[in-house]
Length: 198
Image (tube, rainbow, N blue to C red):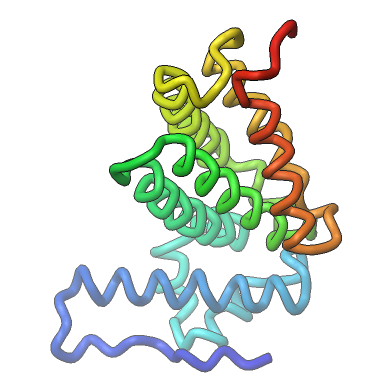
């Protein structure tokens, strides 16, 4: 696999925009190498060669390969959180937004299988921060939906949010997107107010 984007040129760009593009090029090239060869096989020299960045410049951005992979994953997680936040804050029925948030998150889990790269980057601190934000989105939607009588109110919204996330996190083990959708519907069924006595 050959990294084809190439190093961004400084012409007609601000220094800050150029640095951002160089950083993104480093992240993308490193993940391509890690996906092809395994994250533990990638070296800073390979990254420098793939991106066209000198090794000295590369070390100004990142201290090692692991820090690059963590930065790439943090960017990915940040993009996902932005999309989830947009769903969460749209006007309309909170129970429909809850379904959309759970479906989106479940599909992310399904599409990102348990690889060596995933095992490495999920140890980073930003993963816990992202989980807390997602838990807050879901808790807020559950609170709103319960106030409208659409979600059971006999269990606290924080506990229900934890239930939802625990149920949809291991989606990579399911055989298809259709199976992911069915499991999300089962999770939502468990939130309906007609279920009592727990």
